[in-house]
Image 1 (cartoon, rainbow, N blue to C red):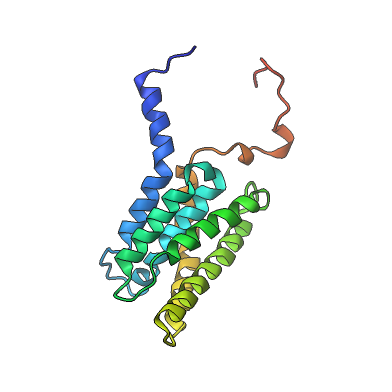
Image 2: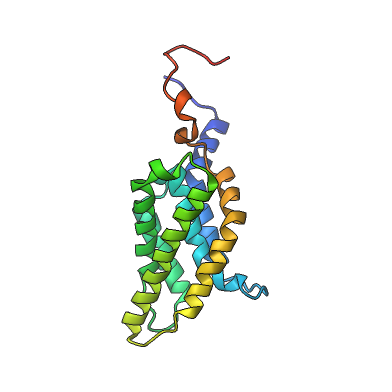
Length: 190
């Protein structure tokens, strides 16, 4: 039996806690009073970006209960009286499920394809939140702010997405197909 040292244990705990900590940071960042004209409008979609990026690499480190808690926390922090609670949680779980179902098309591909996948999932997330909010409050909500929020997030993704990709743990699916699974037991690379 191999006994890990304290640094190895801390490293393992840190890697396990990183996706949840980044998601919590983005949820709390949505309350930041930024003075940028359109950036503050896009902040509610930052947690969806974190869910997308970490679901690409390590979806097991973003379990459903964590996504539910973070989504409900986001809804409670952003929603006013009468706002639906749980819509963001549903959106996070659906984003994670969609990414997990399509990982073979999203991992190890050029950035443009990942960006396109993010655009599709974020559009679905925005429509879901807008639609549920309109139904819950039973009022006609103007979709233009939601679409502006979506466009700003699509423009911000090339800046933040690669940073999160560098932070997340190395995914074995990022290894090129030709070199995946060709080593024999005990064989080392030169």
